[in-house]
Length: 320
Image (tube, rainbow, N blue to C red; front, top):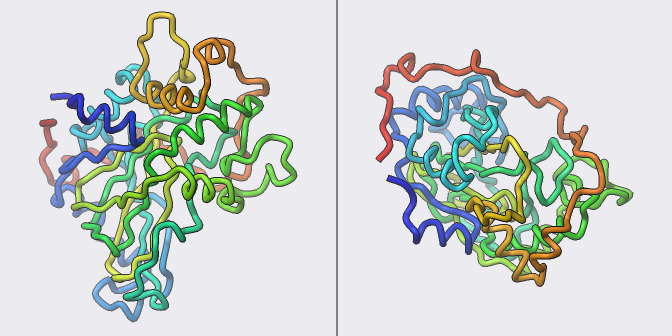
């Protein structure tokens, strides 16, 4: 069916898009059923919930195009076609990011402007404006998520600020966007979020990634976002799944055939005063390379890791 013009424009202007009903609760059940055991808690007994936020290591993968074709078609369209996507981004895992809430904040809503963990993702590579690793960032919802129940805070309007920062640093930044040469450049990601927090407060329009199980949020890789407190102490589980491109973004194309991802970057840069000539002449000035602290514990799945859907006993869905 494809994205509507309204959906495309929403992504270009805001940096994210919600795809509702991309998979069913029945599809999710075989993947989510053992999460309590993996966490070492009783999901029906909140007194066993001792840690508020846990990142589980994945041990199952499904092929996104089979599991959630509606979302996959949107990812391909935003990226400029499936032929532009790298193999690695084709899989979704059960590496859940679980938010059980903190008893200290139960029943105490906090303003989004006060959050201090705004960031962009991609912990394993040095970031450039055109990095091919920076494809669509997917957040599938594996549980219902309500306001106050730990939704991701999406900071609409921040793509341009991040794009301009990377444009101004053609020698690259670390995952926390500290430029090469900064004394803390080699720090592990997530330890230097001051810049992203400032961008969120100065440029952002805050939205909440709420929804039903099976909804999927598709984020531009430059969209600043943050976890929120789960003051309702509901069981909340999402995953983060990134897509990569086979080639770097091309932000100056003679034929004007830009992907929607690229259109979003170009729009943000031009709003910051960057000209076509400047884009034509822009190039990286240092090698593309991995960010070593972010490689620790990283596992890249292969086709052999993927569990066929029929082994879960659920029918293969069709795109609508």
